[in-house]
Image 1 (cartoon, rainbow, N blue to C red):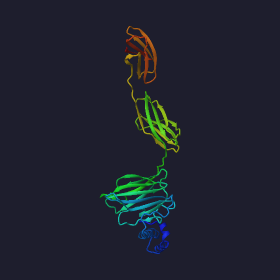
Image 2: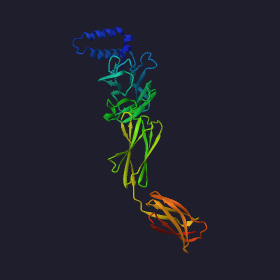
Image 3: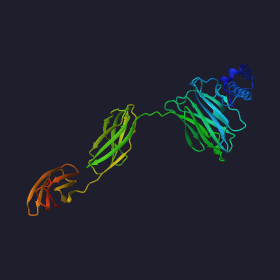
Image 4: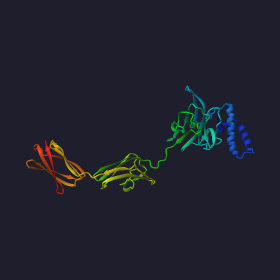
Length: 398
């Protein structure tokens, strides 16, 4: 049970003055302020208890903007009926402070279950605190619980601050339940034979604001593609408005990274794409990551991506074979760059020149159209490389 001191002043000011005077004249008290704070509140709470005040009544005529969290404990019978057994209230206003004091009300001991708030070593039925602008926690205390089911009802008013979330944390089940901060939430729990299920500190409410984000951007993607001995590095970012630049870093062992190039950030709020071509010029594994630096000088890294460059087997192949519709493909793999000359040689020795092919990459596939007037049969394609070496492929033209 409880009584807020400011409410007491409205009803029994003479009683308050008398008790304060008596406490202040008690020479055996070492800390009069502490005794006044604890003893006076406790005494007046008892007076109102005897007068029939309900243990978790609302303040008289609360302003509509008052921020509060009212908690009620219900005992649930085997038949499913619920009975209100205790509760507590927390009000938030800048007129209050966060220390337990005369604005708060001590928790009186019920004959049955008790569910209060604990702060600064005191058990409270009403706690009055400053408005929340940072993370805050309400610590509950319970005792005289019995083995049965219970329900906690949370009635929040005006606590739906932008971005803030509230969670009931259960130290016994390790469950974290989200609470509606401008409406009613119901949470069921059970007390068993396990002492942790009826531990005094089983529950608390944690109010959490979003953490401050030094760099409000996200690496959404980093991809690598290999073309011959070069690697294309591509990455995407979202909400990069605080960024200064990106540095592409490379390693061959996945640990010792060196910078390859720094590019300025576009400072856009939408998703942006960047790319960089690394002429790696060596076989083996290549590791890449992106370092992002914001205007404040803070550094952040993307995940590490890996690419492997292998030496392909040198080969020139012709397909399909047999050749259909006078059209074929010539694949050049790991061949020296330059111009390759082609000749089509019939079985009777007749030679026809075909268009030359300019090879410039590690792996190129080029289409070749044979003369339409040639007859079906067996032919040879003579391929002369830039160093005048010759490769001959036999084909069957249908």
